[in-house]
Length: 429
Image (cartoon, rainbow, N blue to C red; front, side, top):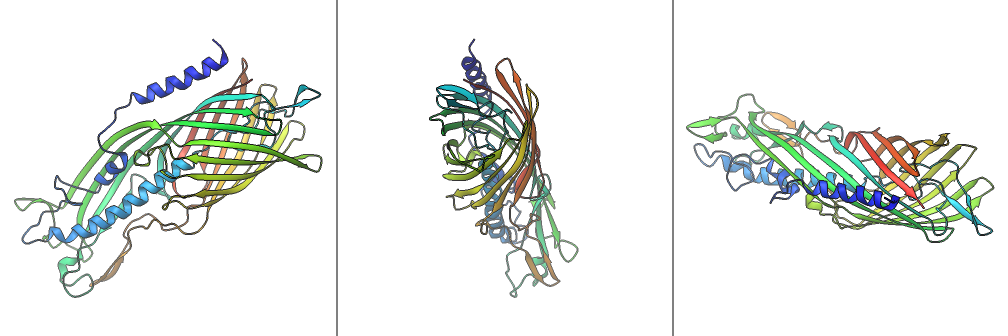
């Protein structure tokens, strides 16, 4: 079996295997929304009306908080999908043609998620397939099993919550959300000329969700009024639970990239420009894409000192979606040829949010009696500046390059996993 057939078989096998996952009638986004709903009614929150229409006094708060929290969670998930790292366009050995003959232009097999300036070489092809596994553990530093939101009573008496006293009752909801992504990406790069590479990355994403929600009626003044509860007047309860699970599999956002080699700086520093466009082919409601176009431009610097090759990437990410922020991008690291068959690659990847986020979190709840303020949610309101440490290796094996990598977050920003693993296989021709 040829190398091309091996890689194609691996990719198609991954796609078929992922497609065997069960699909639900509800979208993944709507399932997240179900975590904040308790009971079987058709409202945002199912509280018993008790003696009088007291349960309905939380419907507006539930609808508003549910919309804000769901908007924030789904935008965080889709933003994370958009930030999924894609393997370098020119991994492995690169070549230049000198006097009509190919000459090696690099010594190591190159970085994994960063870019280096050398191109593949005219007419050369790099194809590969890799799989990345992500289990989201925290949202802006808050564990995903401890996300909370508080719902306030409707202000029905004297302006300001607390008069009458039953307005002191609060419905608190704690979410336990386990979201996993497995991303299998087919990569292909072609050396259009000695100085220009074009490439495409086609991801297939399998998303799975297992979530629990617990709602509790309490009071900021001490003891709940007894007018607000779950269940029925005959069988009231101050707690209730919800549960959702589901999965989705399909095409993610396809990336089209071009790298242009630029003139050297001095005698030892190579330069290039990389343009990257993400096409919204993935379904945002199924957590497989953003639903919007995005583009990246990177200026690439790299050098080679014997077997040590440092590199620096700096650029900008432009995102067209209303809920996504632009970002400044910076990556610095090195790849080191350890043996002729082993390359170590280490990078610090970073993304710095530009401007303020358009997504709002549930606001604080202010009481006048007692004079107290409680948080609308425990998710911090701050910028999502992301920094991560990537470390891995490229291993030459029977004409293939085996890629192994781990990514660790260094900041508590955005929706992140405590560890992201990648396994891949590449071959150049």
